[in-house]
Amino acid sequence: MHAITICKLSKSYRDQRFRKINALDQVSLEVHEGEAFGFVGPNGAGKSTAIKILTGVVRPDGGSAQLFGLESSNPEARKGIGYVPENPYLYDYLTPLEIVQLSLKMHHVKVDKPYKHSMGWLERFGLDAVANKVVRKFSKGMTQRTALASAMAINPRLLILDEPLSGLDPIGRREVVDLLAEYSRNGGTLFFSSHVLYDVERLADRFGLIFKGTLRATQKPSQLMAHDNAVMVVEYRGEQRDGARPLPDGVWRIELPANQLWSFLDSIRRDTEHVISFKPAGSQLERLFYETAEGSASGYVGSEA
Ligand SMILES: Nc1ncnc2c1ncn2[C@@H]1O[C@H](COP(=O)(O)OP(=O)(O)OP(=O)(O)O)[C@@H](O)[C@H]1O
Image 1 (cartoon, rainbow, N blue to C red):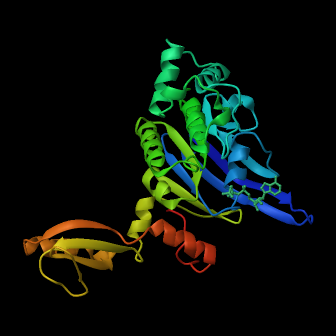
Image 2: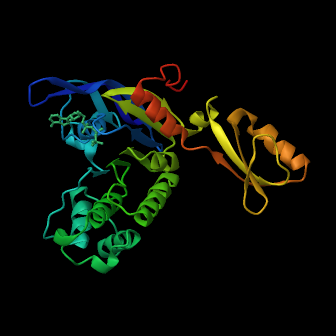
């Protein structure tokens, strides 16, 4: 069974002048159990609308959204599902400990030692020192961490996160990415939206690119790498080669098409030179993202086979 099945999902709003805005237009996608799926798109693309439909906050105009085979509007479907909206609202006068414990109760999650379990999660999110302070004066990052801790503490069968890393500083981002990656490694299903492409590349097994309410592509990050346009940057120590530019300490830097990478690395090995690093030149996802936004890549943007 799929964790998420979205079929021809549509939703429109009216703007202040009563013009129709298609927030979602016939979007279909499936997320497999155990998969980490990143929903990518610029501001206003329709990500939050899709997530709000999945979590039963908004009703679609057409199509369907199911969680584990049940319509998302059915409260049963949302049991055991961790959800953190883009700007989580937490009750001002509760503490992180109370919020996590409330989350366990609401989802009817039974654990042996609720206090220890809750504190354990707060500790993982760096909130143990403020576990008993009311959240009223928390920064955006601390609020985000509290919301994430309460979503993960229920040991969710599916975690739905709208821009989970926004509001976190770079260290916070990395810590939260590590926690989400661990959840994923342990078999958890993750559906998250982001417009920070680097995070998507780090976390997602697969991503969907949405733009102006339509899904333009679903791919694995590795498929982007396989694309002919992909460019790799290799840094190596040894002789200068055609196109290589010098860096300090006898290191050379060269950019090449991804399909020439292995033969290039082979030639370096044959000449007993040393590869220091190789990586994609910029983000391929970023390239796809901009090409889609500019509408200039109809041949490039495609779905996985
Ligand atoms: N309640 C609403 N009333 C009117 N228009 C809305 C409403 N909610 C969303 N929209 C519009 O629908 C479109 C999609 O919005 P949505 O919030 O789903 O995008 P998003 O991809 O989540 O963007 P962001 O990254 O900025 O949150 C936008 O044009 C937005 O202005």
